[in-house]
Amino acid sequence: MATPPTTPRSTALPHDIEWRLPRHPRSVGRARTLLREQARMWKLPDDVTETAVLLLSELMTNAYRHAKVPPGREIRARCVETDGRLRLTVTDASDVLPVVRETGPEDESGRGLPLVAALADDWGAEPRPCGIGKTVWCELRCTPASPGEQYHPDRSRGPAPTRREDRAAG
Image (cartoon, rainbow, N blue to C red; front, side, top):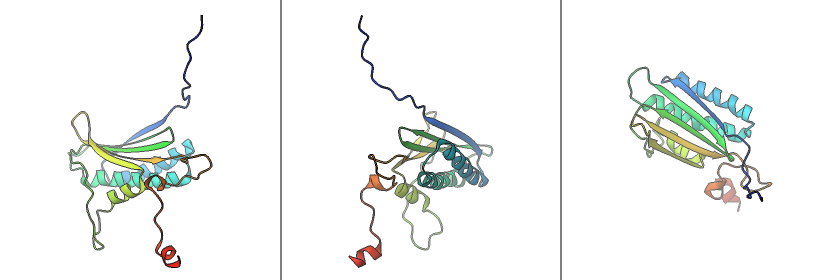
């Protein structure tokens, strides 16, 4: 009896970790430290790690500052690395979805989500399925797009912008 053909499956398990932190400003720094340690264990590239730490910091800051919820509610930060992508999610108990807003040079806040949009390969926000709270997420590519290419977080969004000096020299 012939055995049916099998399709190769990835034997690598996804990396997945979640932290529950109090809704407090100190939790932002704690989340950064935890992600840096975890990324080192997962052997993520340094540039991916630094971008991910910055993005997680922005999402955590928004959750503790803007999620007006009863005392004692936690913020959940989750990191999943699989198939060459790192997905960061931050979940809080507020139902209000974030909105990217225009900021001017005099504004002292409001730049977090534009930063996430600029640095992440993809991002979004959605209500939690249970009906309480929301999840804001972003993704980064962790591997080069093709063999031999170095990872660059802006590659998926087209050519890198030219610097003012480059345009003046050309």
